[in-house]
Length: 158
Image 1 (cartoon, helix red, strand yellow):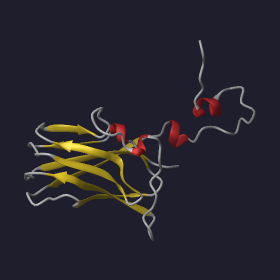
Image 2 (cartoon, rainbow, N blue to C red):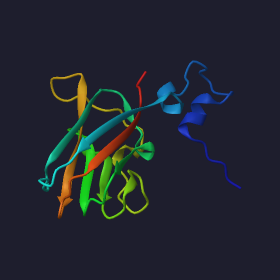
Image 3 (tube, rainbow, N blue to C red):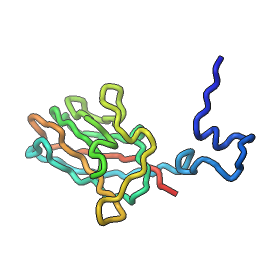
């Protein structure tokens, strides 16, 4: 039987040579916070449209596996990418809002996993200490007016 150690365990184990080197707190634990953003869409959305969701400080760490968007009605074939200027689909890559009403997870097995599943602090937009988080409409057909609720999970950098 083989034993494999993570970098976090290596930094925390009792026989480490430098006891002052622990894993960064925000990587091991830390409180998860949520930005909840609601928008009512119109029938006028088209591919490459951008929906600005919120502004978060640089350094926060997105947690895509706890993030999702909900719909109140069927949204016929709207595909969204969610991220920032540094990576437009870092938080979610190809979330499809289709005939299913309700919760659409950012890390569902059927979609491409986003880049920020690996702990990645947000990079500030040029000339700012913050990052604009936005959804890009990757594609859409027969858009419907719907209420979308984005729940973006993240950890504060420390």
